[in-house]
Length: 417
Figure 1: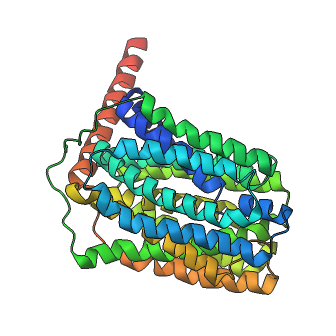
Figure 2: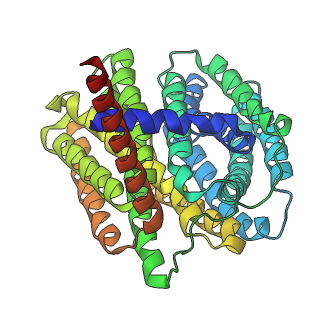
Figure 3: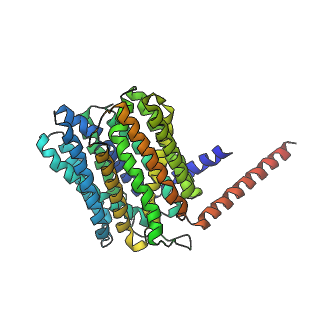
């Protein structure tokens, strides 16, 4: 019965592709996430490229630090400016074109010029994300945000992992990622009006500084852990197994979990699925920390499940809590917070990307597990951002559908007799 409900909700969530306004948000963000996860944020593609050009190890970490720093600073500043303009779509198109060109330039420039290019990439990414976030919040109703975001994040991860694991040659990866970024311009082909949504619920959450802190603290702590995981933990795990096998046990659970979690976030509320995802993540990281690389592949699968679930939540959170006239500001602060946290995780792990010793591997994971579990208490005391009337209405609709199905089955049995 539970599986049938999830399947029904999943296919219902796919209906947004018929709506141009929703499609114009899903498509560009899907492509941008592929670019973001496949090129600069997680590191392996660019560090592999730098390895081939014999750049010093410390410079690889510095390049990613420059990217994250410039992206966080721009995000923090850009949010306020976005709220002062109505030309959000124009900003998205211009930044996309420049991002695509700069990504391609990495294949032809000298090593000494990469620091400048990375800083420009970070700057433009810091412009793109808050702009997109405000546009997303204006156009998509709160009860549909999780499913659109979950599908985009899940699909982008499974595609971008092929670049991260060097299934495609590095130079070709950069060219393909540049083209993928250009596909974001599909937003210029499908042109819905930039009108704000009409609320279908009567109450809007009111947040004080304490409540905002309950949301901010878990996101900040979680992405410190994410920076540690992607810089040294995952490369160390990957070194112990076949790349294709690692791709399957990470990407497939990540995709399925992001879809299922996104449905739950839109139907059962934000708090409970998110707290469960953090518990799964903390337990998985703890097991890896205790048993090391000998713990097998099961903790990696559960880690992918928990990680993807929280990632979906962290990307829709700012749309949920932002006041109507401050959506750019909230998304700028939110995304800036995420990149600062990832930067701190990178610095804490030693500003490097690659395999580390077993002892350091375990100590970093035990530290990470403690941090993940510290994310849970603030969420317990936070308010539910999905309004109760939406949750109640969905429950009633579900019960009515079940009653109708039961009645139809009963009538069919009666007619057969």
